[in-house]
Length: 389
Image (cartoon, rainbow, N blue to C red; front, side, top):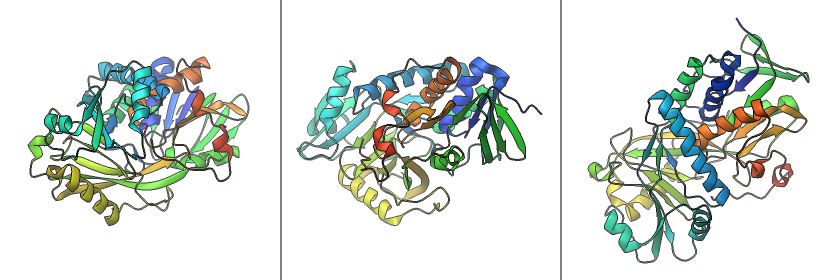
């Protein structure tokens, strides 16, 4: 079996599968992907029917990178023949006064980035989507390009295409040891030892486990989150051509989807779960989180509420500023890490492309300056945390 590669990717979830694909497009069989569990496992954060994709973001740089992400997904769709992105339109809505996530940041960012949007009052929101029940003190931003990115389809397409280009993908191959020998990196995983010139780390909640091999650590918070699919009594009202993806921009923050992949709509609270580790997390839903979601939906989108079809748990891995980490490791210019800060699936294919550019070209055309590994807040022992974005 081949053990020497130019590129090794550790982790084959959303970001790692994408990295394997984009690297293999240019490096073919010089790419190895290693996954500690089975491919498509549910222990992490990037397996489900749907994630929100949007151009509405709180900084102009994220808006511009989201434009790039749409183009990258379009490339994957063209090559795979799979439909991964479904545009439903996206609604961000909040109280006019005192909202914890100011809609003005999104207005300014989209305006600067040249993204069209509409500012709607409560009456107009309810005229377009009678599913909402809103008081006059609510307003919203509608952006027509918002919609759904499917992790189940996107991950499978990335892995299938990576293999078609010659990449080797191994599951049930946990990393035991890593040694940077300067001109090459040695990775012991499963029952084999591999060598490479460039290493990509995309392991999300297990990032500090892998970084420990380099004597490094990031101040990460890991929480166990959950989403619930509801058997709505008015399920037809929540089909993707009749209802947008949405985000409630306040604290607590909630978000949701039309019916996609299941016969009812999906909703969740953002950063509403308990702090855990990748090892201590459970797969049991939190009834308090479930109740907060049900109460919110009953107030603002009552037709969505019905018996729970099922609740699915996942992990959020959060840097203190909730910005991405995408950089080489200090002292190890041939080792790269990516962390999505629990809002990255829409950017998954973009991450893979940027990884490939960094590893092969030594630079990227995308603006990743804000995502440095050693930015000041990530060097603090007890940094202030702000997870609202």
